[in-house]
Image (tube, helix red, strand yellow):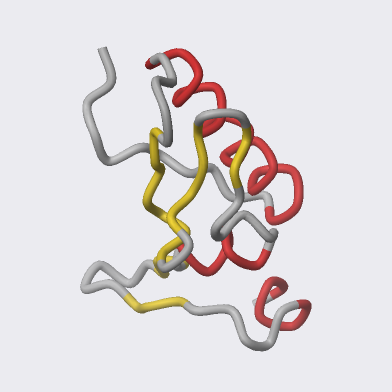
Length: 88
């Protein structure tokens, strides 16, 4: 409710178990990361959830950029994003 008050256009969905799922794409895009490039890594310009290796970035560089975004979302919205892919 606090987030909806502060950000009336926030995208969220009710879940079957009476929880609320907030759109990670909305959070990331709202922070200005859609289409951003950081060295050889960036986000896709058509969808903020897609990380792109633009030219030879290492796995560490991709993960570092992902963590930067996740940490920024946590600091602004108080929401912890969890990767949906298995990272070894």
